[in-house]
View 1 (tube, rainbow, N blue to C red):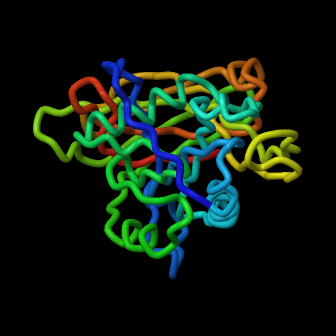
View 2 (view 1 turned 30 degrees about the horizontal axis):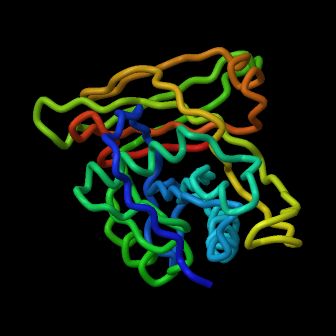
Length: 246
């Protein structure tokens, strides 16, 4: 199987930044999320299924927030990804532009908005996760079930800096039967698929709380949601400070 690589040639538009959790090494686990792991994947990529399985496996960890972003730029290979969106592809390209490289490929994992690696490379992922330092972030449904509360605490690591607080609407595991293309005849499970990202506010340090109606979650037909707290780099997604998933 060959890894798919795409070099962006056009100017990239800014994407809303996200706040997600940070995780430690794969070798150990703690009770609180410590890292955000974002996988860019495609149903039309023959190299992606091992990465999809890895994300499903580590998504069970309480000390980790994992998100899958199906991209649409391989649809021309013969199978239109049923979960992909242009926004996911744009987010991946904006990460590459913020880093200053041209590394846009599938499967690609981005840890805490900065380090990237082949999505099935456990050793590289384990190394990246061993260097995390989380920001306290909490997300919960208040009694009565009508309100979602997000709380962010801690100190802003950059003097005078601000981070965007994002809410990611996330689908439960989705099983897809691939009918054509490189994965023809395979049934693949996709975990924590991001349906959309919405900014809910800005954070510049200290304790802060945000409240949203649970009706927004139902409107997006999502079973879960994640809070993403992320710095910007020239209007593009940068370092993720912390996060949580409900």
